Image (cartoon, rainbow, N blue to C red; front, top):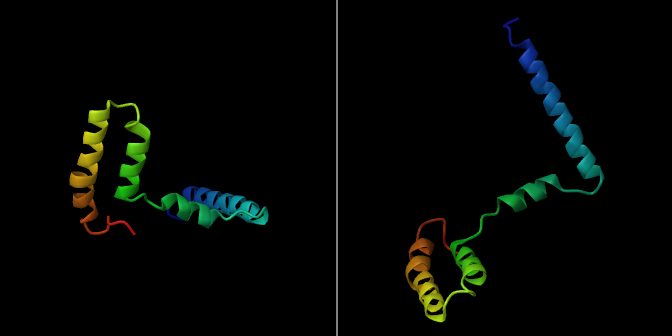
Length: 89
């Protein structure tokens, strides 16, 4: 024995408990993998810009609001969407 038997046993036990929990979710009609993949879907830059505009600019002064929207659309979005892997799909 290499002295790691207890650690391995606890890892195996933890893995079995996690498998049981996932089986219960699946038996109840859940989709743990689908939920995980949905959570991993990263928002795209245009989506983040839209969210920022919708959330943060309505209470700004009209000129400030217009300036921020213009800068985001004309300066930020084109640069970020031109980077590999960040373009809107």
